Length: 44
Image 1 (spheres, one colour):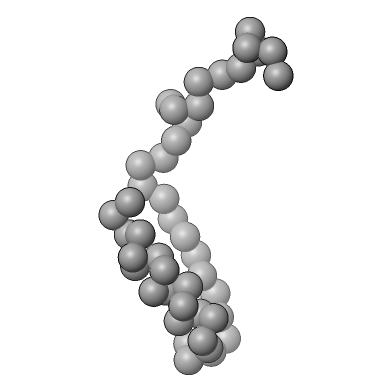
Image 2 (spheres, helix red, strand yellow):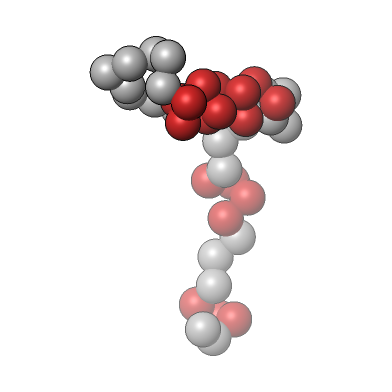
């Protein structure tokens, strides 16, 4: 991409984001792993 057409995206980045995780079974290992991973990066 030509630099004259590029935009500075920093003004479009969110500081607070929503993440929705849906599951039919809260005991599901994949779901539990996803929750652990999001908690580790909560303040990132």
